[in-house]
Length: 405
Image (cartoon, rainbow, N blue to C red; front, side, top):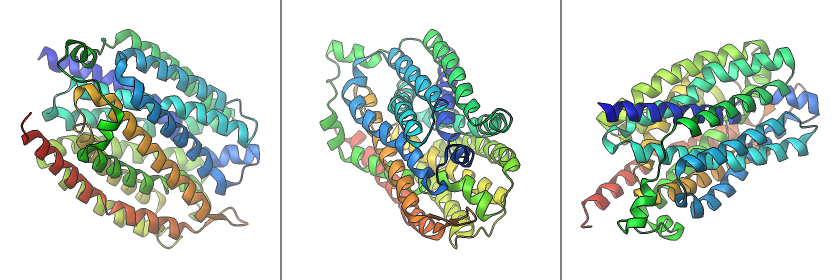
């Protein structure tokens, strides 16, 4: 019982870190039309701003794969969060597209490793048989950011200008970072095992060459490319293609985020009970239905609320299943190396999806987006691979665990 309470305390602290990290990334997308008007940035180029964050996170993930397993995870997390706070604050000082991209590069360079370290801490603390539920709690930070953070940021931008949310998130991030460093216990098990000779030192090459690692990286990359070809464009698509009012965006994210939060908690238990493959298949079916109805013709055929709730619900099913499997790929001594590689793959794919969408889309005279049907076709084709890859990774892991040590 004491161990369960200790696990829950760690999970809540990690979830708070993830909340700030995710909010920093998420808020830029719905604020895009606001700062695009203020800074003279074409709305069709908003994917490049999102892509700059993810590209920087990808590069830092590759660097982190060489070094993160050499440090106490608590200290590494504190450094990563401090860099994220600085990059976010600089975003509020941007004067044009180049300075905004530079600020997002700094935020991504530290935000990527922060995610890798956070997931490594969960993998270190929580046994595999409870991992699905644990990932549901941690990934619930995504929904909480949608329910509270994004609507609050949109309202703050409406009242105080688009710069205000950047400064607010930086302030919250500083408080959460200090709290995590002060309250998290040292996480040194991977260092102690390596020092005692009970575990080899992790090698990025040996980690990357394992079949289960390669399949898992491909799984994450395809899922993220599919999602982030769409996500950076939703705010503009809802407003200019669907006629959704700017003042209603906060409520849209509030309702969809609340549904997603509940879904993630339920999904974690479903993964533990029914397996990740079955859950990912259900989520993929929902994704295909919602994106097909909402974007496949370039004109929304669903109300914005129904579309976004359905999208977030399908994403909850897909992402919890996928990330639960991915936490089981690496051994303790190589977890941060693998999670950094995964973060890099995730962000490269996200950047690729976002940048590709910006090339496929055009901004019409009325600010609506043309070419959304091409983006939807790309996302749908990639999304269908997820259940197959989840199954393949799970089978590899079962074979590895049965093999003689």
